[in-house]
Image 1 (cartoon, rainbow, N blue to C red):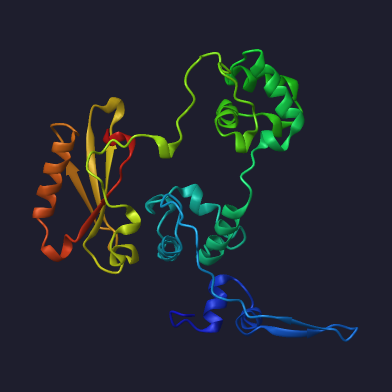
Image 2 (tube, rainbow, N blue to C red):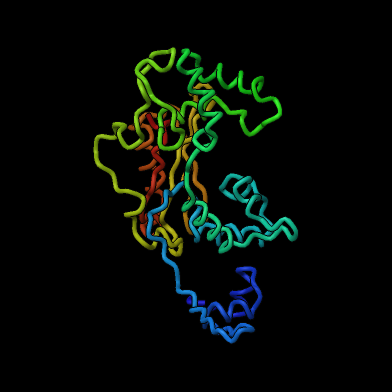
Length: 287
């Protein structure tokens, strides 16, 4: 409604009754049968305090997805995992409600991230005993199916067991020296890993507001697609506002100098007003 939408339109967008929306805006007073009065305050605008990783959908991205779905675009034509979109669609009508989806995502983020193993003392003890006997997580994953054949919730992937070892706050497994048969070092935390880039870069949350808002053309996102066996690669540039795509041909390799030269050539073909900024994905394929 802060953007000029009417109460009725906003309620339809969120998926609630118009009267419910009015009560949310202005609050209400209820008197029960005993004569007791209860006052419900208006719902204040909520602001995200915690910075959310850009790999999760933002509210603006959800609105774009809703617009594309209304335009009859297929799930795969939208630049997001189809499963991410489909699980937020109304199972009855097939409609996608961006604001409802954003609220559900915010609630999920506030929930405890305690893992299955910590929540199940019997399962935790079973796994810990086998780790103490120098069983590998792969072996334990297999034996769980035989030990608990009728309890699929206790059938865990070996990666879940690894995470319970290296993230004790989630799994609660005791990490002893030489706990794993392989004897390999503990996994390093993501924030402890050394960067592969010499020069400090500008973080994605520090880019211009006009780039984040997708209102002005000329702000691009770049990525590198590597072929099978790392034998070929192609770069992609997508304008955040118009979704126009340019391809970077890399016939001589995907090293930093090859990507740099391809970018310079691509942007040299654009007028200045369409070459404002570039946000480049720093995935492992750039190594």
